[in-house]
Length: 292
Image 1 (cartoon, rainbow, N blue to C red):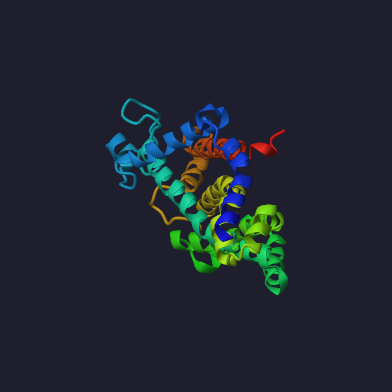
Image 2: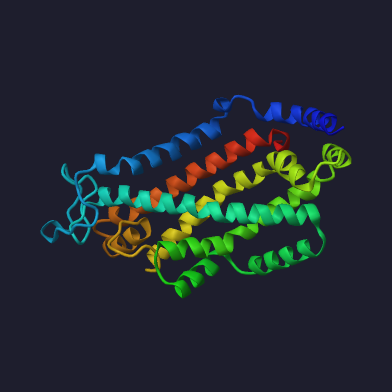
């Protein structure tokens, strides 16, 4: 009986999956996102090979130089090569941005899925907590938590994880409320499948796409939070290269050496644009039935 139900549920889901698995390389938006983000990650990983300079070593004799053959983007007020710090800053911001999504993604998705599937008092408790977090702006909560926990990379991870999980919980709850009423889920229940198997083997693969798509925009928010914290002096401790602190250091020379503050800002914009393209492309690829 159970085997027949599994086959029936797979057959019901096959058309949607076959539409979603069309060649990804034909999606222009997705390809643009892959190229931009992939190039940024490659530059960050290869930073030690692309530049001969130390990102934190000071050279006051060569401070505040204009762009030249030796220093393509000039040097900052401490004589450090701006391009070198830009590349090493990408390593910090991209790493924290991507890793900071993992814990909220897992915790929020699990709590939201359980709340949507089982309902009852657990659903009520989870949603009330979610409502409390949504009552405050994301950046305000992150800044307050980092201020309380203290500056540093570990504090950023904890602050973002404590705030970001609510979005994934809300997304997954909404998806589960719809999915659990589908015929193939009802058939699986009637076939005697356990709740755990229905959730992990049948429902989760069909509803996780929305959480994955949202994760792309969440990475953008996390990077913006990291840059904001660095600008406010609450982020990665100096002299570590980080885009927010680079903008802060360069703003006092905005009228003379404007590249020092502008280039890190443009790096944030390009990164956000690439991740946005990636998210939009994944949305088209994974949920083609929702496109207009």
